[in-house]
Every structure is written in structure tokens, then in C-alpha cells.
Image 1 (cartoon, one colour):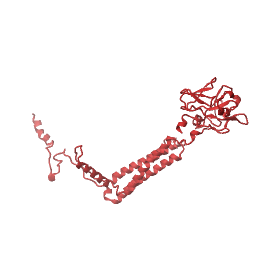
Image 2 (cartoon, rainbow, N blue to C red):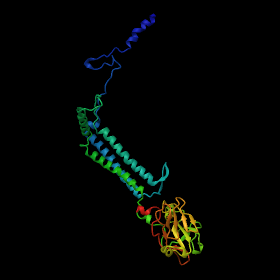
Image 3 (cartoon, one colour):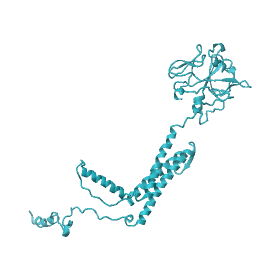
Image 4 (cartoon, rainbow, N blue to C red):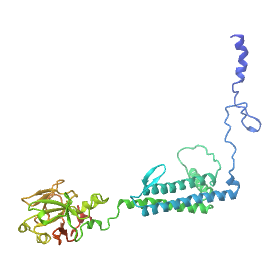
Length: 356
């Protein structure tokens, strides 16, 4: 070893720790042992722990946040009921959006945020802030451990201020009770409630029959024997926002038969010069019927081959359909145009009778 190495060795040894040195009073001497655990820092009390006025201010803040949540939930429900679904507004910088979606998102977000902010503020300013050190223990819980858990839970409940901070507690209960109403209100969109909408269509007494291809009112002479014509109610326009909903119930097919070939008496009474009008909607799953057999007077649904006899009240003669096609009673008005004498006698569409 060189003389230079020998001279530097003592200095190197002085920089190494010399074991666990202990200062006077039993405290760890970090000067002697720089790797010693200094322990937790001294506990600093919050202003709410030493000033009851500050604690009351924090409680009022928490109550305000929970109250804001309740008001936002009420606003959510009011927006859902009051705002139309087609109303569009401009919101900078988002642009043009649905007023209903914007209101629902804003109010529900505010309701949830206020609950979270109130709970966090309560925990940080009002609940106990004392550090608790608990030694590790085996996973299995003995009777003593269970007793300690219950005791700790009771202590925590007491330290949380639930019993003493009644204003914050009661407003929290109010906010938590109202927020679920937002979800319950949204269940309304599983409908809307059908009420009696399934029992009625756009057909009314005096409504003329409009050719769905030419959009012209139909006269009896426009429908030759053996032909199939599709019609819809007068006043129904393809540009209407509810056109698809209405045509799905009101679509009509017209067939002209020889009166002597009509077997069903009511069908004959509801026809005009052999022209009979039946719903175009199959009573199986609602497909549009468009296949007509001129010789047999049968119509066939292309989806599942349900077959109906239009010379015998539209009854089912083959396939899975559950009941006959509804018939529309027709006549002619003073100008010679075909018109309805009312709505269908039975609801149109699939399996309605099974649904009530």
C-alpha cells in the first residue's frame, strides 16, 4: 500500500457509521447514526381542533356543499321534466348541443361533486386528526382483537362528529337521499309510458286515403280488381319528425276484390265496392307485408311467411302470426275520394293481445 493510501484511510473510516449511537435521554443520535429512524414528526393541531368557531365555520361549509347537492338533484329532475328533447342551445366553447343533455350533465355532476367535496372537507377539518400507531398482528382475529375493532369503530364514530355535528350529518343524509332520485327519474326513458298509444293510429273519421307512391288522394277507380295499393292517412308528411312512428302503425294496403268473393260479412260491410283496407303491419313481429297472391287473395309476410286471407277477414291461414290483420272501415266523401270512417277496430302490430 502506498503512503498516500495509508494517509487517506483514517478519513475514509471516519465517514462510515459507527453503529447505533444514543444521545442523552434515550433519543436516537442522528449525528452518530445518520441512518436512524427519526420517527413521526410532532403532531400539529388544526385550527378547527383548537378553535370552536373555526370548527363551526367548517361545519357550515360542509352543510352548504350538501345543500348544493340537494338543490342540484332537484334541478336535475326539473330539467328532465321541463326541457324538450329537441331544444338546441349554444354553449361556448362547446358549440350547439342539446339543452336537455347539457342540463342533466351539469346538474348531476354538480350534485355528485358537492357530496364528494363535502365529505372530503368534513374528513379534513372536522374528523379526528390524531395519528394512531398499530403494530402488525396475525391475520386471524381472536376475541381480544375483535373487541378492539369494535372499540375502535365506536371511537371513530364518536370522533367523526356524527353525534355532535348535527347540521353536517343531517344535510349529508338529505344529499344522499336525493341523489338516487336522479337514477329513478332516468327510468322514465325506458318508456315513455305507452298509455293508450298502441291502441290508436293517425287514422280518423274523414281522413282521405293517400297513395303512398304518388302522394295523391285515391278514388275507387284508381284501384283495379286484383291490384295491391299502399296508402297512408291524409296530412302525414315524410318530413314530420314523428313520421316513422306514425307510419309504423298507420300503413295501409288496399285490395279490390269482387264483392261476391268476400267471405266475411263484416269485411264486406266495411269495404267500398269490393275495396278492402287492411293494416300493412304483420301481427307476428311487425314486418311490412308486401307480397300478394292475386288468385288466392292471400298476402304473405316476407319475414317469417305468415299468410293472411284478405277475402276472409284477414285471418291467419299459415305461419307464426297470432291474430288476423286489423281492417279499416272506408267509404267515399262528397268529392268521390276514399276516406276512413274511423280508426282501426283493433290495435295494429305484433302480439298486442298478449301484451294487453
